[in-house]
Length: 104
Image 1 (tube, rainbow, N blue to C red):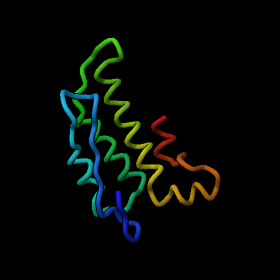
Image 2 (tube, helix red, strand yellow):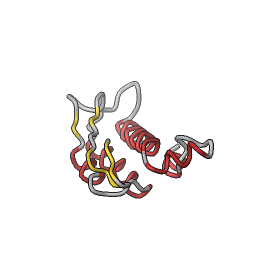
Image 3 (tube, one colour):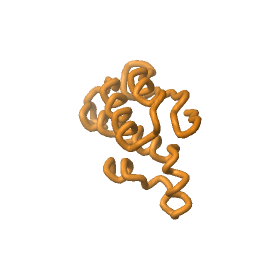
Image 4 (cartoon, rainbow, N blue to C red):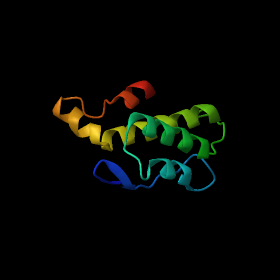
């Protein structure tokens, strides 16, 4: 992901292991691009990534659980890379932004 002046200028999200092939999360990327990386934008991208996932229920978990995990991981990763992550790192709380806390 690339940002300029606090706005996402370029992003990419792809999922593996939750469908028959690699899934490009174009709607999640569209939700990020051109927006400031706020908790609301991050959560929207997480929701859209989870909707793009096509997992199957198996012995490792239900499809619902796997979609939840996609959402959780996308939110956590984006929360660690956003502008607020730098502020949180200064305060000794890197990677523990509000979106990450709600996802846990």
